[in-house]
Length: 260
Ligand SMILES: Nc1ncnc2c1ncn2[C@@H]1O[C@H](COP(=O)(O)OP(=O)(O)O)[C@@H](O)[C@H]1O
Ligand SMILES: [Mg+2]
Image (cartoon, rainbow, N blue to C red):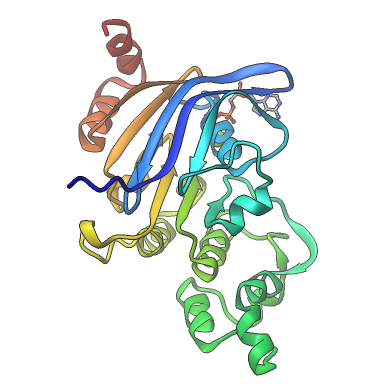
């Protein structure tokens, strides 16, 4: 018996931003336990797809549908989608004046804090915080205000580790991050995607967006998709696709598409 384990199903999706069509004919199916990678040059619509899956109102779905855990979420609010188990790490998250990083972490920790009446983070979450190279004084700072590039990305991953979503999207987690921090970030992306478990036992899934592909040296993916001019030009084995892109650049994908 074949058990269908589809977690995210995107069918025939078209998206407009400011009345301009950015994405069209998008079909993307991600199973429970799988990691997919979305590659493509700058300005091709990767972040637009990310925002559309997250449900930002500015990204208007003009055709198609998005199903998550078998439920049609095409017109649900971002809050409802997050409650259903979607988590994100933004490419350029905003700074939030007046909200401490600790406040955000405590939202995830709140159930425990309310039960115990504790004001501090759970010891387990504090351990994860230290693992992400933040200390007690750092998490008192306003979210992303004056953070370095690497600190912003590590903070995004830390919030996800507190949230533990079933499906996580990472938008360019390797951009603007030095090598040492990329390895740290990659290690925790692997945690968030259940890579410590055998493939058949993985529960959590993800979509990793990268135009450099650098993070793929540290995080394995089941399938890669190349987005070109708002359409998925090619899908297949990540190693093979990445090798072609490294040799020929994205222009090789255009040629490959034209011959199919
Ligand atoms: N808020 C916006 N208003 C107008 N155009 C936008 C907006 N966001 C994205 N775009 C356009 O959509 C296209 C795809 O952008 P984006 O999704 O950010 O690409 P990528 O993430 O692949 O670099 C670009 O041409 C960009 O200018
Ligand atoms: Mg982008």
